[in-house]
Amino acid sequence: MNPTSPVRRRPGRRAAVAAGLVLAVALGVSTQVSAHATVPVSVPAAAKASTAAPQSVSGTTGQAVTRVADFYGAYIDAKGDYTDPDPTLATALRKHYLTPDFAKRLAVWETKNGLDGVLRAQNVPARWTVTDNGAVGHAHEVVVTLTYGSGTTTQKTKLFVLLERYNHIADITTTSSH
Image 1 (tube, one colour):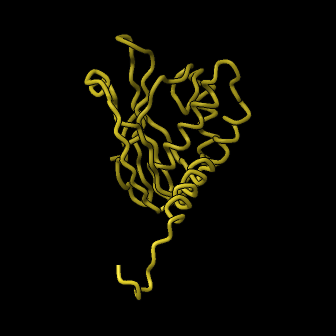
Image 2 (spheres, rainbow, N blue to C red):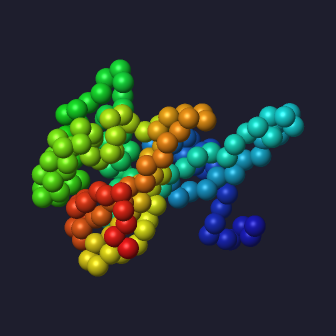
């Protein structure tokens, strides 16, 4: 490094950046700073083979598939917490995510069928996936696959969720609009 260069090494800077990253992670703050450290660690071959990649979930504001995934994840959590289910939260989620017209139609369907209309079942699924199915006129269709049971005894239900252009759920059916 040239002694007349405007960039000079600061011995404490690397430690300060590292401390800032630790604080940001502890506070749950996202950061764009990249830090690399090399620490030799001996990992047995058996441990390497059984270690799975970390799971991640991502979403985008205003994206239909993210909106439906957010709704179903929160709704299933509210309904499926067996030690402390939260029917008030489930009702609030419906009010927030469903169009008023669809909420009325869904209540009629539930009375007629004796099932939860969002899940099309009496209980909550063990797993679910949410997949984009594309535009339908001025709306958007998202496929929700609910898996009930566990092990070798599972049953899947595929639902087609229609979002209106203002990102409210306007319909949930077992057949596609496509």
